[in-house]
Amino acid sequence: MDYCEALKEILKHNIVWIEAQSCSGETVMILKSGCEGIDELFFHSSPVKLISIIAEEKAGKEMLNDILNSDNYILVVEGAIPKNDELCNFGGLTCKELLTRLSEKALAIVAVGSCAVNGGIIREVGGLGVSEVLNKKVYEVPGCPASDKTMVAMLYSVLQKGG
Ligand code: SF4
Image (spheres, rainbow, N blue to C red):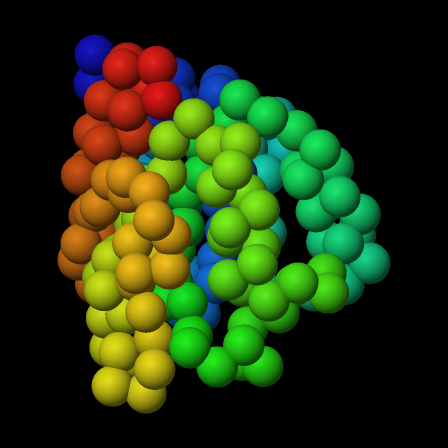
């Protein structure tokens, strides 16, 4: 199976992809992979749900309620989780609360990019990695940005294991 086939296979599954304190570098890496039709698939045709703290608007809040009532998904986190809750809110929840709620029903949790792994470039100003916030197993793909190939390999592997 080549890279694009693996990516399209991944995008058939329920994935909740959160951008916390992020520059969207990992999302961009996936979208510029060069695979035909990937934008349409990622944003519209697949069951992937992307929520970003910089898009905390009505549509985002409605989608968040649907997501919080769903289950059987892989939780992907991009970006750091700030110690200061005022810096990261979505739909009335802090990023820590959102992450904790979503982690409860996630089949697996994957941190993509160094910010999500250990705070990355904003660690010095209070950015934390996902595993520092959740007391759960977190699969990690470091890099700034994380390699699209490595993210896809990790997600494919996690799905093969059943989450
Ligand atoms: S790891 Fe790098 S590319 Fe990813 S969100 Fe952080 S700064 Fe952006």
